[in-house]
Length: 604
Image (cartoon, rainbow, N blue to C red; front, side):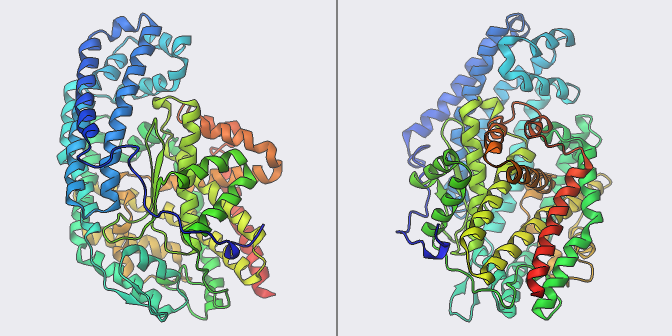
């Protein structure tokens, strides 16, 4: 195999092709599908409302009704995906913005027509419901039924559920969209590099945090955070509104708070596992600080928060990596693991399912949007560097996961909880690192890859869990009253100082950095899943290194399981137990081993 730098190929498309969904907003299929969605939802309600108890007497008929429900949800998923993908690619597109509102309203109306089904199932006598959970005709929906049973104490009446769904359009969902709109409209002070390039977008400025020049790093860091500071009060107001909405929803459903509601109703993670992760990572902040002290010695300065991703002073220059070169390197890495896996990945590029172009107004960060019955779409911003390659590997991990799920599962089993949804992405990054270290012969570049991996794992295990600590404070405060910008700023600064200790200088601008974390707005307590998934991915990776190709079928079977069983049970397919404190400790121990390896290289 050759080094990444020697690969050359014609530049492929940087823009995704959404025509598998619809050609554009004038496509007659879109209007027809929206009408079909309304019609099929109404017909489902007319056919089954008040009949669920009778259906339950015939499990085969009930299974048929569930399949009808899945088909309606599949249609809704396509409609929603198109509008939101167009909007994410350019949040300044007023037509796309208007259509997201329009399709969200249509899907909410359809969802309200379907609400009765699960509620009437849950209203069945427990003994009758228990027979459905074990009926052979419903075996494919066992986990779906188990989840309905678990959620029974927290469901409300159909009328209330309908009202809450409708209010979400002008409530929580509207606040989330306002944050996205305002963030997408931010203007940043341009930063010119010594090389003569000018960074203007959030993606370009964030890429400069890896620049060798400390002044460039600080200028890019400050440019983004100055823009955030101008909107600090607005973003805090939005966050408070969302947190209060979650608080009220959790209370009316009988949960102790937002955390319990998220862990039980969405993530299926025992709170003891969440708390163990928080405690274990907090006790090992010294690992984070140890790395940055070592890096500070090499830099000849105490690192600032804008220097966390600075290259080591004697590291090789940043590689210019074209999109085609990145695709080739990733394909080679995946092929070494599994040719089947790599073949699935090739389809994403051959069929233009990835939007990688940098453009003003594009939603920040990266994501994978699965469309059941079709495939997934990936969004990222390619900035011609290795960091972009690892982002692509991460999002492609999501896409491959959903491709494998589609081979085995129907729609109700196709949306894995967050812990499993992040597993393949982190595992992909570990496979990529393996490959790059193997083909790279230059010692300085090898060390660069090693430090990049250490920093990424430190981010997953420590920064992401620190974000969850911020959310614990936010939702605890929301339970006793409103929160404001000063509270969020102060809390974020305090938590980051706890993490960094005396190893990293927390710059004043970092106080407003929380507003860049989209997850705290649209999905509470999402980020701890990155930390927990990192633990699970490292456990899988170490099993793979021990067992070799014998591990591959078991791992792919884990991915194909989707949400057909609880996540802790799914991980048992590869003998991983997150309830065992040793599993978390082992992941942190792996990072410590990498740090020892790096220290040995530095002292040579």
